[in-house]
Each structure stands twice: as structure tokens, then as C-alpha cells.
Length: 465
Ligand SMILES: [Fe+2]
Ligand SMILES: [Fe+2]
Ligand SMILES: [Fe+2]
View 1 (cartoon, rainbow, N blue to C red):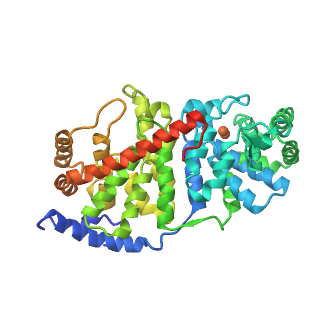
View 2: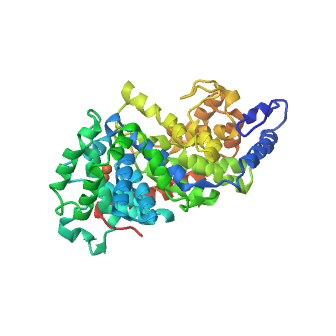
View 3: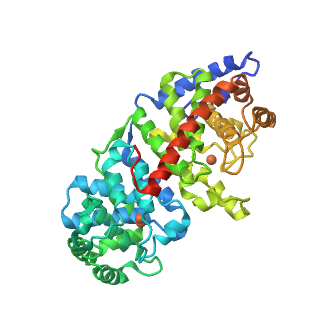
């Protein structure tokens, strides 16, 4: 047998071994070899490799949304080219465009924003700003996103509340409004002039005149519009996101993952602290299982990203008060697949991403979306599945209290007995219940405070400390 990074660690089980910890340590040794091959210290990821999977996942919320985030990034880039802007500016706008509607959580928000006349909603711009600004390489991008619906008003739009507004915000605004005018139902080249005419009517009142002129220059270049229709946008964008863009080591990636974790969780007050709890439990379990300190971030990263696919799930479904209809449940279930599709192709993230993406798989093969069984589910995956279940049943939600210790223990033991969750891991949790639960509670309390601050800042338009 070839032993590789993805070799299920439980192939190495010897059920005659005595003691849970002994067996876990044995698996840990095998896992260490995997992790060494994974190269914790050499885990370097280009930030740009993470942008488009995020952008695409957000756009999967509905076919009606199309590739809106990507399209805005693309048109912003082409406007920058026409205006002769620097490579740094192009790079920043490719990213800001790809993430510009990250603060629009509900399907209704996303659909409203596709209406050209839409003027009321700027809450999503502020939400995007608040969510992204905590990650240092995104500070400037967050400010661009904050003002991406601000009208120009003959130059008044240079400032907002006394603060200068980045030029990029006005580029994104123009690209965004042009993007919503493109219909998938007609040949794109037949639409270009009408799109320009509509934008031109709002020259100076809503859009920067110089940028409207740049759009005019684009109207005669067929290839720009055909790139949109032919699916070439992503490769064009990719080439223009600077290679000088941050390269993330494992610690940077953890910081980035924490930001993504907040974005996923804050979509709904029902889930506002969930991934934070899963991360705390996963790391606590990794510690108990004897992993080394340098490996803890891998578990935290995986847990922070395990529900990434929820970016594709409308908040209307995430926070529906009653039972989901079968169709809503079909949508909800797809989130794990979207996590996998977004992250697994990133080579150096593959192993860590799949631990998280398989959190709904079960040892008896009854899980989803791959119906994998014990032989396919490695140690990291089993930890993540257990951390997800444990956090899910013990956390308080607005519509119900979390389970008591007795209830949680009974349920977890049942899941181990039925060969859903790993029995050895469940036993390890049982022997350290208070310790693990305390870590979860502390992490979720902190996340709940951050969520309150976020909602407050959104309501008042003020920036929290
Ligand atoms: Fe927007
Ligand atoms: Fe938009
Ligand atoms: Fe999930």
C-alpha cells in the first residue's frame, strides 16, 4: 500500500491495542508523517488562490445571482486598464470586486442589488467593511468595499463623513451597476451600447465622468464583453492579482481563516458562534490526542473553514424559525459539498480542507455528500465530525438551549455505538468532558461578544474598537 497524505490513518488500527491514548498516539505518529509530508512549516498559500473560491461560493447562492462578484471584479479591472491605473490598483480592485458583496447575507439582498435602480441598501457595504478590515492585507480593500455604492454627486462623493473615499470605490460602483445590466438571455455584444447609454445618463450625478468615459472606450472592444460570456474572466483576473500579494504561512493562514470563520458565522444569529466553537473543540481534541503544538493551527484552520459552503446558503434558510422544507434541506445539505469544491483544489490546503469538508460523513457510510465510510475517513476528518456534532448539540441557539451534559453524553455514546462517530474519540471526550466543554464555552462567549459588536456597529454605522 502506498502511504500518502490522504491515506486513511485508521488503516493503521490495531484493535487489540490496550488503551485509547495508546492507539491514538500510534495514529498520531502516522499522522505526523502525513503532516510532515503536508509540511506544516512549508505550508505557504498565495492569498490570491483563496479569493476566487470565496467569490464563487458566494455567487452560488442562486443561479439568478450569476457570477456577479466575479463580473464586477472583471469590469473593474478593464476600467483600470482603460484609465492606465497601476498594477497595484488593478490587483486591489480585482480582489475588492471579487469580494464586494460579501456583506450581503440573504438571497433577497443579493437579488435586490441586481436591480439597477436599487439605491436603498448600503448596509451590506458596511458589513463587508467590518468583516474584512480585521485582516491586515485587506485593510485597503475593506475601505474600498465600504463605499462601493456611494454616488459621485458632482464630486461630493470624494468624501464620506469627512473621510476621503478611495477612487476604487467609485470604480467598483460603476462596474457593479454596469454588471447588473448584462442579461444572460441575449448575446452580450448586442447589449453593450444600451448598457453604456443607461450609465451615461447618470454621468457626474452617480458616476465619476472620467470613469464613464473609460467605459465608453470599452464598448468598442468586443473581446472584453466576450470574455464575460465565454467564462474567461477568472483566468484574466488571476493574472492581474499581483504575485507580490501576500503569501500566507500557516500563522497568516490561521488569521485569514478566523476572518472567514466570522464571515460564515455572522451570516446568521443562529450560527454566529458555531465555527468558533468547533475550532476550539477540534484543537482541544488534537491536544488530548497528543498532537504537537505546531499542528494545532491545522485543526483550527480546518474548523474555521469547515462551513465555508454556507456562504452559498441564503440566510433565509440558515435562520428559518421552523422546520426546513425538503427543498430547503436539499439546499442546506449542499454546504459541505461547496466547502469541498472551493478548497480541496488548492493543493497545499487539500488535506486540511477535506478534514473540514467531510464533517457530515459518517463511519457507517450514512453521511453526505460523498457517502464515505470508515476506510475513507482519516483522523483529522473524524475529529472534525465529532467537534461539529459536539458543538452543535451543546451550543445555545436562539430557538433552543444547548443540551445538558447528561443529554450530550447519551447522544454521543449512541452515535459511537451506531458507528457514526469514532468511538475512541468519543471516549476521549467523555474522559475530558469538562475541559473540552469549558474551552468551547469560552470560545463561543468571545465570538458572541464580537457578534454583538458587529451588529451594533452595523446599526449605528460606527466603527467598534
Ligand atoms: Fe453591492
Ligand atoms: Fe454588487
Ligand atoms: Fe456544517
